[in-house]
Structure formats: C-alpha cells, structure tokens
Image 1 (cartoon, rainbow, N blue to C red):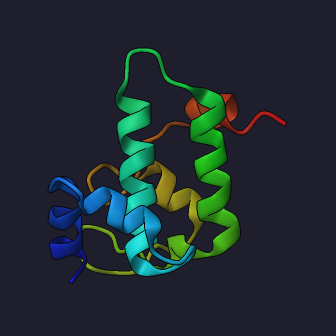
Image 2 (tube, one colour):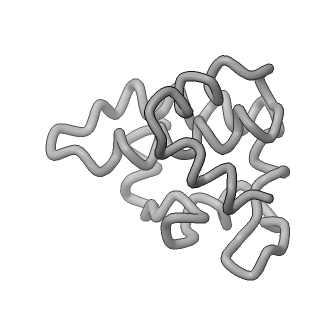
Image 3 (cartoon, rainbow, N blue to C red):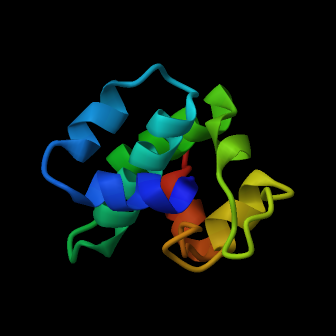
Length: 102
C-alpha cells in the first residue's frame, strides 16, 4: 500500500491531499516524508523548515507508519532518517545536526 501512496504523492494534487490528511496518519506521514525529501534535495536547503517538518513527523509518531524498502517498520526515527530514499529520508548525522538545532 505504501508504494501506491508514494506514487500518489508524486501526482499533481496528491501531495496537497496527503499533507491535508490528519496529522500522524499514513497519508500525512507519506506526504511529509516527501516534503522533507524535496526540501533537503534543494541546493539552498531551508534547514529551519526541514527541521520543523522533522519535528512534526517525530512528535506525531507518523514515522512509525512508514516502511523500509523490505516493507518492514522502521525500528527508530533515526533509522528512518538515515535510510536511503525513497523509503527513508537519506539524511546524515551532519544534516540532522543542522536541521534540529534548538
């Protein structure tokens, strides 16, 4: 099911619909993951915005609904962050340090 959702988010309007879903839901989690991936791919990464999105994903627990490339649940939020895209966020520890500065 998550693969279908990932494809849905890539369609016009799909991302808007996903991010409009209830916070913490699977649709929302897939949408916010896509938003983080898109934001961190940019040449001029908005670390504050990316950090805000990461915080929402962590606090909502929505990350627990996402699956890795084998279809298994991520064991931790950090594992999701470090896992390669498209299932994970493909971030490094240095990326996280920049984005999660208080």
